[in-house]
Image (cartoon, rainbow, N blue to C red; front, top):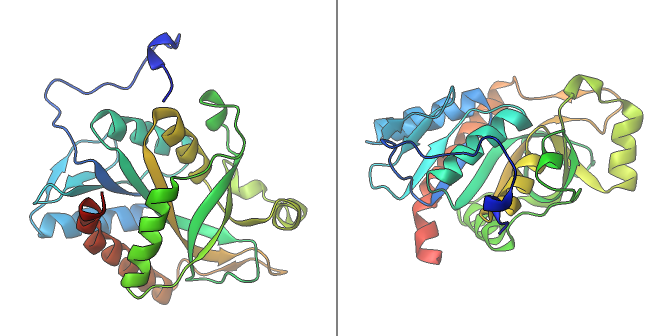
Length: 248
């Protein structure tokens, strides 16, 4: 872990005097619909809401884990992640969407994110590393939890960008062919970088929302089938979280 005390920075993430410590493990939903559903589900099961900027945060009734989000885009996601870490988060799983660059991935498929490629602008303020990797142990647990829940998945590299409306066909083809990138999103590489910088475990489960490897963009995120799939995956992950304590 880096020696943060030697950093010449003006502001550091801090825990407020009245802010309670969080459980060590949590799910971080970056998309508004999934985050709202997860928080509402936890509240219905006796969980307690807490403050997290203009995002959401809820701790399970048995204090085993928390859910947080939304936080779209690398800067906002990192802002929330920094706060979660200073409140006690040590094992964090990103739950989000991604666009597929490989023909082996279709809408509704699950991707366990591997090595990242930084295309957003936040990571460079934490590290010069362009290919951060997630926690091997937490990723392995996540894969096993998905299989036990009856869900299949693939593994692949992920490129993150700040500019989803500037993705050219040439760029995406190059990423898929020359960099072996399986999918793209907006937050993963930055969160991976910060997790390494702060010394916490981090992994990501991404649901393919659109196919970018076809001649024309194939978007599936607005269909009822995709929305139901997303809710099902979120629910299964929330149900699996208490078992993480048994594996540590």
